[in-house]
Every structure is written in structure tokens, then in C-alpha cells.
Length: 202
Image (tube, rainbow, N blue to C red; front, side, top):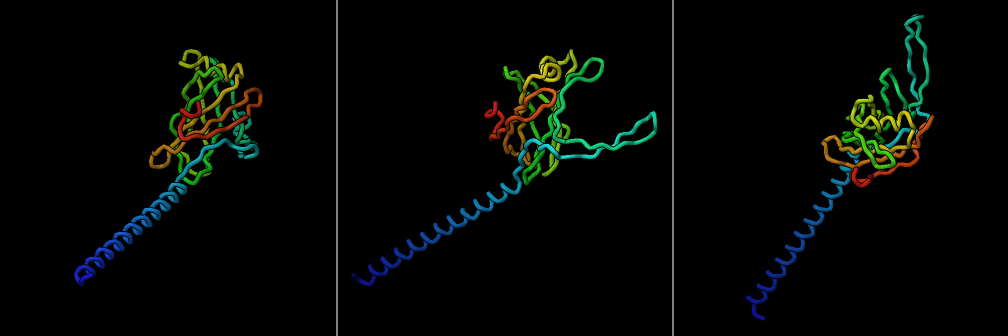
């Protein structure tokens, strides 16, 4: 092999090694970027779930007739169903909490009966920081759309489910939760499921 040929071989080898080093560097950077992205995802991931029994809150009631105040403890896990007012308004209210690391922006809230009929609900606080609670509610008067569904829950005590989809603080969708409720005088969550979208939980 001549000196020129040897130089060409050495140059080709050096070029190949340089390309390999560049490829390994790119892969390393991508791996570090993926790790950093996964860490960021975990730090900003909200997670909605139900409220366990025994989470108590002190409330103060003002009694106008006597001018006195009284204190009472309220279990914040309590699911409320029933009617109120002369109309009457049929209602249901389910407490939920954010146990994730990031803030949850609650989107669509859907109440579902066993026959798969649905009605849109509301939340008291659509932006839920980590560790905070809110109420997902459905309330209808007799003339309202979906009144029959609200009455099925609030008056007839039919079992129901609630599906909530949510995003993170940047409004990027981060999942959905479904809570199935055994209705009655003391409603309770009987099962819970999570998915990447609300459609997967229907």
C-alpha cells in the first residue's frame, strides 16, 4: 500500500470514528432530553380521584334567631343527592380532589346513568391545585334539559357514574377519571377508573 493510499484509509477511518462519536453524542443528548421531559411530565401531572372518608372540615353556622354561632364537623367525602326548594331542584354533588403533582384544569364533567344517558355537570372550581378539593355537581329544575336524569339521581336514587376529563396548567390534556356511585341514603363510590381520554371510560 502506498503512502497516499494509507493516508486515505486513515482519513476514512477518522471520518467514520468522528461520525460514530457524533451519533453517540446525539443519542446521549436525546436520551437526556427524554429523561428531562419525563421528569417534567411527572412534576406537572395532575391526578383526580375521589375523597376518602374521614377527611373532616370544621364549619361555623350562624343562627339568626338566637344570634349565636355553632360549630360542626363535616366529612368532606360526603356525596350529596336530593332535592331542594319549592320547584323542586333535583341535585347531586360529588367531591373530587387532585392528588397529582401539578395543577388540574377540569374540562367536561359528565353524569351517566346505567342506560348510558348523559348530562353535563359543572365544577365549583375548574382550576384545582395539588391537594385541593372541589365539587362536581348536577342540578336541574323540572323544566330544564336533562331534568329527568337529575330526578333519577336525586329523587329515585338510581346508581350513576361521573366522568371528568382534565388537563394540566398549560391546558394540555392529561387524562380522565370515572367514578361509579352506588346511590341511596348514603351514596358511596363503588369503583374508580382512569384513562387517557373520557371516551375510553364510556
